[in-house]
Image 1 (cartoon, rainbow, N blue to C red):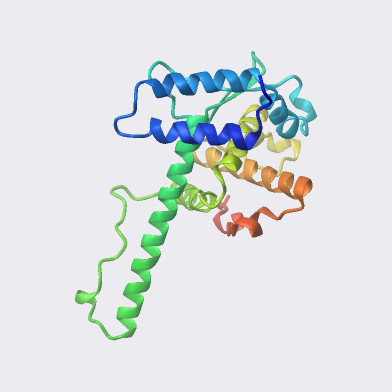
Image 2 (cartoon, rainbow, N blue to C red):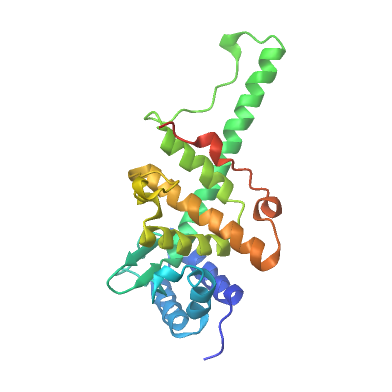
Length: 241
């Protein structure tokens, strides 16, 4: 088959995903996505991704990348699955695009909250009585933990990246899970905390973002944060020991 490039392959996934996410998605779209997954896995495309994203880590051995198919009539929600026995990272293209949509939703929520806060501040400066102030940003039904709020805000910043870069991050997140970079033994002198749950999910994604940032800098000379106006300062969200 003809060589598949990142842009053409990913655009095909995006077009099919638009149909898949429709309320009344055509039944054929899952089969079409699975066909595209098969073609992608059989092409040199995944090998090129492995050279780009896995080879920089020599301790990964023969770890491979494969795109995941549907589970029955639908695709799963996860971004990636790591299988140490099969030496494989499965990346879910529909999961990546669903994650991109969630990031955009978080960005929109952040903007609404910022607009509401600005409106209230202006009203206060103009002498509007408290009882007449515009409604504040709607609080979630359950109080958010620091980990939840941090993840939401991080996702809002990730919405600025093209979805193809979120694909790279999903693979690198799989590398983080495979290497267990956020479960490193403190006795070995690791600078990363031993962590679990929501914080671990954030730390894996943060590690993936920072690795992607370095990769883009090394291969293109582009500063990722400057290019896409990503204003994320992880030190502001560090958990106290």
